[in-house]
Image (cartoon, rainbow over all chains, first blue to last red; front, top):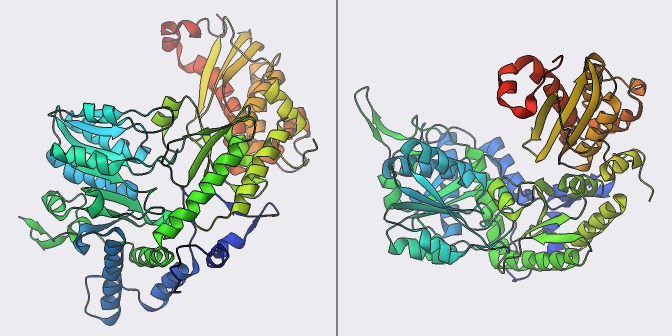
Length: 413
Length: 162
């Protein structure tokens, strides 16, 4: 692991040298990768860690007494502890490895929801949510005869907190809210929302997929009950994610998947489950990916989340000002507090055409509904183009984005 | 503005995007279908009027990107006045071209539609170009398969040879 000085300011040129993929050319142009909200790139220390695991440490975990199995088990559990420290969980057993944010939310909807949500109960979501924080709750609500209540936003993309508070009733069982909107970048006031819910005895799940890569997350300070995020959006591998859960809540939950590794004893008459976190990790997990995620949080911690946030905020501010100044370009999502995401529409050009033309300039953005169709409907747009930043992006890349949009406007006359 | 000739956004496509032909609705369509690409949000409606077996009138409308809209516009121009068999053949050939299943040089008989041949190099955009053609095929097929719905749906009245 390369040691980085914690200077409070990023040496971006040095950081970029850690990411081999950033040296690619696309369509004859230097790659400008601005689709980090979909998936981020992987630095050399994480790639090297995966290679080291696969070449010298791999075996199945929690099973055998031989050297490799013990090594793999130790490294896998060490990764769990790194993540515990990264999000400041009280205990490592509150960190469940999942396949990603979607898996974590489904685990809560099924493992907690099926036990504690019944007919006539209510689940509070927000209109900003990604489909992965909507559909699992709808499936639960359909099965149980529960109702979904939705917190609205204002035109800037900020949650309307008075309406949120008014949605609570005797039947409210859980709140599920994104920390940062993947489509608009709005940072939601989750701490305040959690305090309000807790005063009414209602637990809160926070979808942290878009927050964990950009903000210093402290689950104790937030006082959230569940916090779900994905490895591949924070420089780690795909196929791995984390569900943080308060130990007492996790212990009260039914396992979501049954199988090996999650049991204590099994007879055909009765099975007793392993204690948390293993109760929720049935089957052989993606061991390498978990260890890779451990290396990724080491890398991010060495840079320092405050330094990362500061650099990304400077990129966001510059890109917002520059794009706003282009005639015919409208920023979608102008919340006062935003992170790393810039959605926009260009008058007369469909986002997919913007995306294809930007690609011809080597600029990678995401276009479409961003898995947030209810939000797009609320905003009255079918789709947007979305540039999303990581700490390895530069102001020169913001220039390339702006030049690419201008060039698309020229093509369309 | 000069555009790289290899690029997709050639003048003919941009022109059809700006001024789509046969854009709008038909008063008395004999066939119609709705095409939706849930991945990108392209959403178009194709309606046509068959006189005997000939496409006497055709129109489309909807929300879509330039590739989809230009493809739909050029499709309406290409199939108007043709019989159903010819239109279906053209649809099949267009889809083959867009998905890269036609050998090079085979696009000549597609006439102006050959401007879409480059789309096969952009897999994510292929669906945009072929959505109108799939919708056309669905409109034709609806006749054969949805007579009960046709009774229930006032927009779907006199079918084919009615």
